[in-house]
Image (tube, rainbow, N blue to C red; front, side):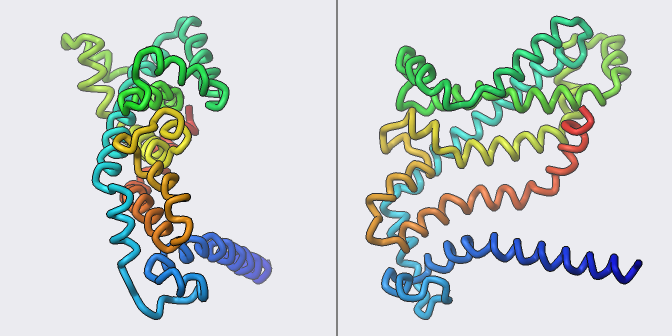
Length: 275
């Protein structure tokens, strides 16, 4: 029986490694070809570069206005995720702590909103931003992202149910108001689930193409993802430079994910699964 289990484990590992290799092939293709000339890329796309060059990255930096687009992406991501965290936590706290049926109805209302596909509200969102004069403005885009705090609310309320109320009650006895108790006692205890939410939301906002495409039209307001889209036609005859642009867009979020990934499992298991 032990031999059969060992053979099964080995076969399973081989299958998993095979799938990992298959998943890494596109990334290998993407990165390796950024260091080749267009001619070498066309002739041997999967081979290592024979003449290592950084010209593609230099051209990409100059053509995509990297500094401005990176700043736009950074501002949108940081402010949007901050608002998502704050709004989600503050909304989830009374929903999780209050026992009245009304709060269960409020939670259901938010969850129903989370289930609505984004594609169904594109036109109303566009008309709304147009009416309040926030089209082609990163402020309008930030408000759109912040409105999708339902995911954070769902995770937070699950986490709150597993936090003991004794600490909050003790703070109240010592003279803390509910507002002070939340920010000084409760919110610092939310670090695991907050880290998880930040990771998921940063990945979503940074890589999102749909909303910037709909609501931003000026090159000055473009995010890095929009610069990639703009380059599809502009760099159609120079795919090596196009791939370099994609790498420049992916590098910041990949670094962020590698730094933060150890917190994902702890946050999910402590909040979403138990809740």
